[in-house]
Figure 1 (spheres, rainbow, N blue to C red):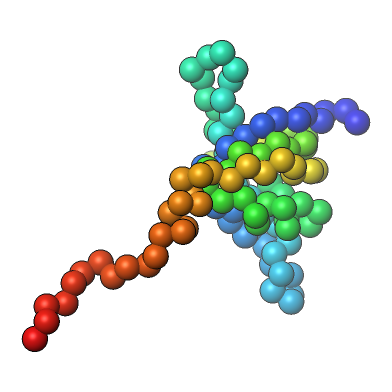
Figure 2 (figure 1 turned 90 degrees about the horizontal axis):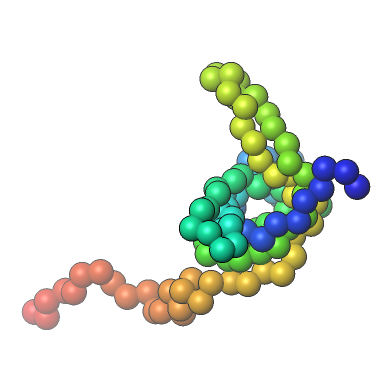
Length: 119
């Protein structure tokens, strides 16, 4: 398949649902991720768009998750600005490695932020 790339990314934020079906199920999701260039200090952030085929996998991705994806590089023109936005249209998402920091934070009990004095 032409114009296909496989890239490893780390999620910068949780997925955002852009479109839902009439039944309320997510149909189109996007997320921001970062790609670290090997043997360099350079990083690139890029938007990843996920359609019906990859929505379920994309919703499993949380902040800090490392994942490998296969997809197509694409562009769209911003309606108000006229600038082109580059993103990856995901065809497949695999190899999810969740962040240990995110898992530790989720395992902590939800404690109140203020203490009430005893009367």
